[in-house]
Length: 234
Image (cartoon, rainbow, N blue to C red; front, side, top):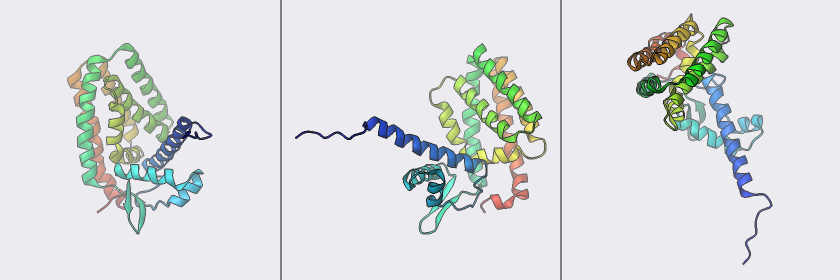
């Protein structure tokens, strides 16, 4: 029996399919993190599919991935909703983030080379420009990028991806808090202290500074809950 091959190469079909799923996932995740899709808001698969010009399948796949990250809640026979912020989940995410990123920065401080330090300092310069122009979105992206660069400099394969997934529960909070009072300027100062410790190859100071930086979010979280109770689950 002769095997009949499809008209299109199977590898091409697979790449297109995976790319589409990943794109839908990235778009929806960004919309949730940025609060374009607010906590508690319903997500209608057919509407999202129509808006993005795709079938329901990649939308369903993306929603399942987001549910695994705790960013979406799926209720059978009821619907799919953007997850509200839960203090207990955020506390757990904070704990994991402190453990992971302080360990990562110790390795980075021990291994940092001139090229890595150059990338850190360029990121800080870009943060200063974003802070001066009050560009919250750009500053947030640079904030995320700096933490990714530190993970990369630790020299552990896949660490950036692991850290990014573990940050899912708190990314929305971090982004919201940048809009409050002087948090963007404070964050920049904390980042500068972190990079200074890495440049000095002081692993203990780098880890302590990173832990203090991450802890600031927890201190401001209760204030956010009082000011925006509708964002939180009870």
